[in-house]
Length: 452
Ligand code: SF4
Image (cartoon, rainbow, N blue to C red; front, side):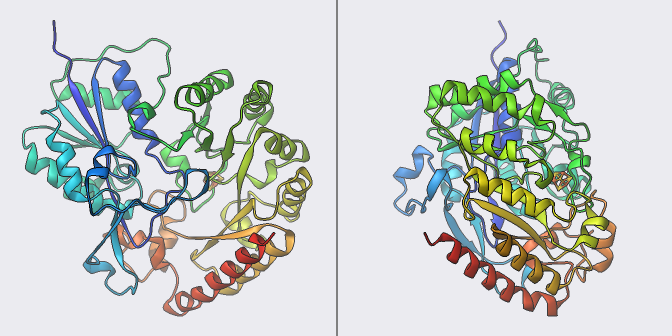
């Protein structure tokens, strides 16, 4: 009988100026692990961002990070020297996640696997990915390392040249991954029939929340977004199966907080999210829902707003981006005049407070003025929602990429570290200086909205 092959899947550290756990889990990696486990591989997971790893308790230097409501909170952090290309910023740079020594210790407890699979997220977080690969190369020089995830797909050439991985996976579909595993002389895994395995959340020692994805892709094509590149087709899971998964995590792990990772959760709601939420209501489940990936403003009808409230949505984030109509016409066509006002009114009438309703506002777009952002902040507050600034990060393969490259003083094409949104890389130094005032104003409004 053939010996079961072990695969080690790794979610690297975040290297950045700031990081916060807003229901962030490597869902793609966990889903792939679920599939591979179903294919007959033994799976080990090392999530460098896991704040509950049992080995952390043995480390006297690890003070538990501050956690906040609904499972959100801070990560462990260790200050690092700022990489040379980012030296002009006055913010301190850190490695977020478990201490490096702990990662090595966990790795040393795992006997040599058939293969390492490393994921990647933001393009400018690649130093954490490279550090993981460097350590794997040092400790397990003969084991192949496959690198996948968003950075690998958006900056494939950079990853191939500099990451040190054996193979960079630049396609999202599972077939390509199993084909690559087969190339590594691993036994050809059998395909599980018709079963969509759950992500391996059960491999965490302890978990505060679950991330759910009920659909992939987005019917919109905002010029600053690469959703059409990363998930070209819009597909939806069977609503019954989504509900079964939700129920499974609630009953087996006692999870109450669920964060939706969909790009377009409310689109075609009658045949999708409505069916899922009606089941939640019928079962009277004591769960809370959060939408860190914004909801589409246009889809918030009175009916939908009431359903969201009754089903237990607690954190609503809207993809408003700007109150500048001409900017919407040029960049996304997803909000028309009056849409945002109507959506907020529907949510407020349904019982959401202005603190519950956050509106993402993009800042730092090529050609966008500081005044336009300031105006949007005031409009959001006046209409009855809470502003959240989202600094623009230029994304390779988005429609706006070329405009971003030509408007930036940084060499965005050569160095992904320059995609870091903290730099506001497509704004001039004068506009960047003014950004501090915008942030102050947002904090002021948020404080006012937090008062009972
Ligand atoms: S920004 Fe949102 S609405 Fe626009 S294409 Fe991306 S996922 Fe879709």
